[in-house]
Length: 142
Image (cartoon, rainbow, N blue to C red; front, top):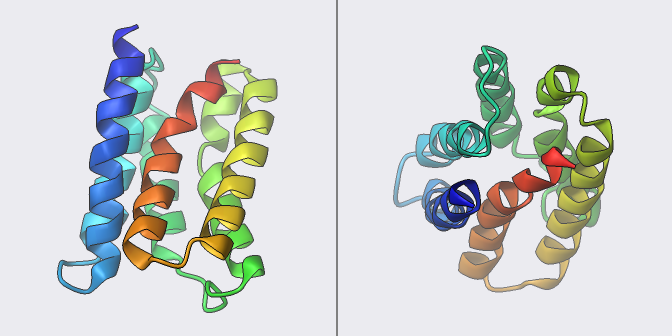
């Protein structure tokens, strides 16, 4: 139960950092490093303790830094969501929760694609993407 509480709190922080890093008013690292750290902290709060989190941290930073040039089109949103999902592939190898990994990949990729395609207010759009990254992590436990 505590893990889910952390998930909610960290999703709010992730929404703030994701937006801050994309706003141009703060360094991009707020998004890149901040959201990646929150991802790993949420996984720890959910009971996933492994040295592979170091790799997840690096892959998450890479996925968050890869701002697709087509990001204003649905394929760019799709690629961004897929990249963020695949960054947690090492966790699937460690936990063997392949079904949860597959479900999260479909849910997060679809959410980011549709949310970004149909949400026109940039603050809400970016905050929603940031929150979705963390809120979808409990699916890995399936």
